Image (cartoon, rainbow, N blue to C red; front, side, top):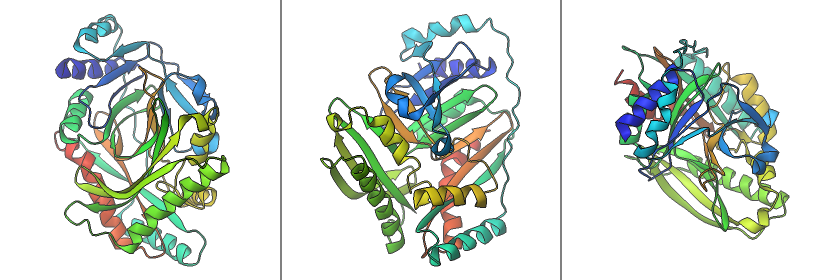
Length: 362
């Protein structure tokens, strides 16, 4: 199945058709969804309960309230269904080598930016700010999306692993440790995840504990704003994803208390302080000024929605935009008034290893 699936991924990429392959955390099954037309549906997040397909929301959907919906014209979930892709082979190859356009900071530039942010935090302009940067990795040979995705799945069992392509917008690959929203028959689950350390040193400092508590308090406040009080919180606990550990608290909300409110909840929660900062609006505006790059899909969210009885969205972390010859890795970290710029640089270096390990094969 997996080799045939890799071939399907490569074929769809060559034909410049919208597609996504994804695997849920701790699952073996990989699903592939392809759309037979290039035109993408854009919908309002508050209307998410009325759509079905694969949702891809950029970071700036916090401002626009818009996301992309990949329609499931072709759905492949087993080896018996791979033949569905055969009819696409006759279509012409037309994928161009899309240029990757993001400003790459030197270490000195990052430290300068981080120190500016930390000083503003000390002066109480913000409580927390997530600062991101882009790392460019040139490839020695042409990037093979199918092979890269197979390597990702072999290495990372506990994350949400995906690869997608949207014509004229870009191609992305990632392995996210963070659930944004999951709907089951009776509950809606979300989590606050923040703080990062190597699994070789999981001694949490007050800085990481504070960082994670900010996210937990934020989610509680948003639920209160929606008049939801009958939820439970489990944690705080340490979870691991690859070579990294994080602090996490898990929220469980009765589904019946969110009737007709799920779109509103999503709009309210995104972007959480785990990927943006606090206060939410001020931090978002600060990021748009201090970062010289467009985050694009980094720290947005994505996942299957009302598709094959699944509705699971994940924050888009540990991710990279790619073309045939290079990867642009997006990495970031939460800064508070007690942050040290050099340590934050090291954290982004740790986080980049998830995707750099894949690039080594090309």
